[in-house]
Image 1 (cartoon, rainbow, N blue to C red):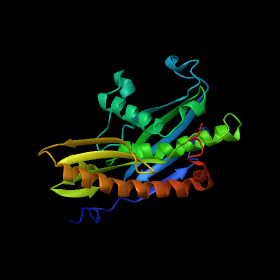
Image 2: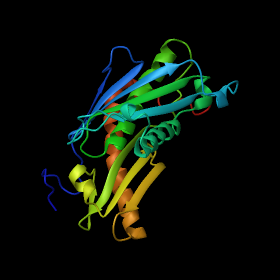
Image 3: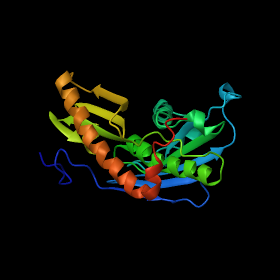
Length: 250
């Protein structure tokens, strides 16, 4: 199967990640995945939610939003509606818990890292791009704490990235764009670590159920995509990538 943009079924869209994208944020990254573009920023606050006060532990959380013309038709700002949609809340929670899975929050101290993910242009895979880009912003912010002497070493235990995979017209595809996602028989988002551990799998049969064999094939293909994304992350982070995993023993 040759896809509309010329990709083969197991081929990802072109990916770029630019560090230090924002002047004032403690960490930032601009990620493009094909025509999907997400701006990710990290902010450090010297406080934690009430349930973590006096615990010695830190927190990582996220906010996510679609800009009005990131989509084919204008998306109304949720602030105008006065409430977040269920989709936005679900994605925010996904990003936060995904990034927390690779952070030693005890080592972080009583600090909160806010990850803001703003979708400038959406063509499928916005949540997976947000997770992959936010990892870079988070690493920058944590490295800044190390440089400032606030913490002794980087509390990142592993790399982390996410990608979509699915069955479209019965064929297994990697990294679905909007058109493919909109008529996929199975749509799955997979979050994995650099060591190949699964953090989250969100998979739904939109029509016919899928088999365990198909599930295994989708996870294997997603693993290939995540490995490619993590290789890009390592290249973007440069020497900082060598510090990942040094917080295991804390």
